Amino acid sequence: MHATGSESPVPLGESPGTTAGADAGTRAVANRKTSTESVPRLRLDELLRGARAIEIDHNGKIYRLQLNRANKLLLTA
Image 1 (tube, rainbow, N blue to C red):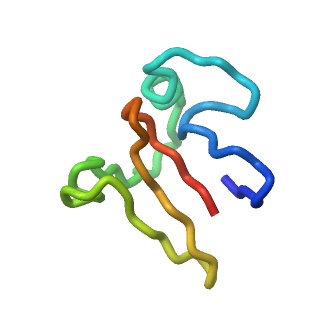
Image 2 (image 1 turned 135 degrees about the vertical axis):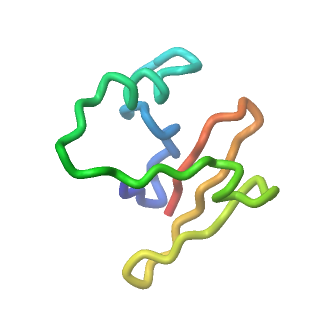
Image 3 (image 1 turned 30 degrees about the vertical axis):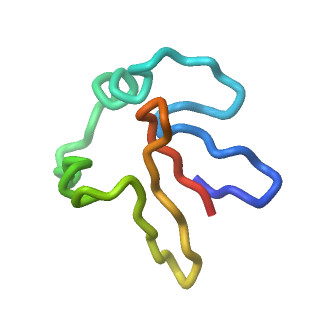
């Protein structure tokens, strides 16, 4: 996801402009067909290590992955 300063963060697993249910991200992942190659899976608690947010450096740009009050994941630039 690539966000600019004028865009609102979108919970992972949801598309901008949708009003999906609380477990939309889970359903999207469960319904996605994967190819024969394995996709690495990380548990969120392992990734966050007790924090509510982390920063991710991708090609020199810093992104923030955080849990909001509703326990949804937000990725912002």
